[in-house]
Image 1: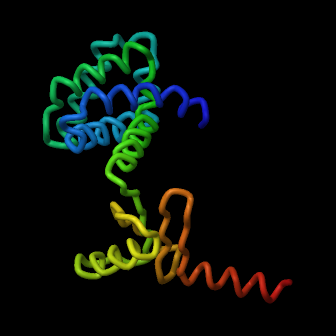
Image 2: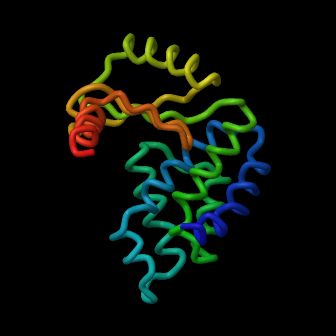
Length: 180
């Protein structure tokens, strides 16, 4: 993973500088490109020597357009062509992560992923976001992912910090205490 991070960093930094006037818009189409590029079957197809760069570009841009229901802007098309020509498509998900990290540093925010066993409604999520921002002492971009294995409660990941109040974590703590 360190190798991909090393490869992705210059792309993320260059894109961040070039798109300074529309960071959020760029993040949206970059996330779409990263989601498509992260598909293993697509990677395998594009890595074939029989597939030209133009065919790869057309395929990916079509999938992004159908998935996001929005055409890539010219900057997105140019970036995608550059990544394909340099055979760096596999680094796109990491480029998107590093781009988001640069946006967060500039905005003084952090990404937070809330893992929950059950869906969280909008009002509860707003309350939870407010509480988490106080707990982590910074503005958070909160996203929710369902994880039935938690049984109940939530698990919050902000960068390298983890707050785990799930039933699964409590059961693991009880198991450790009983077997110690």
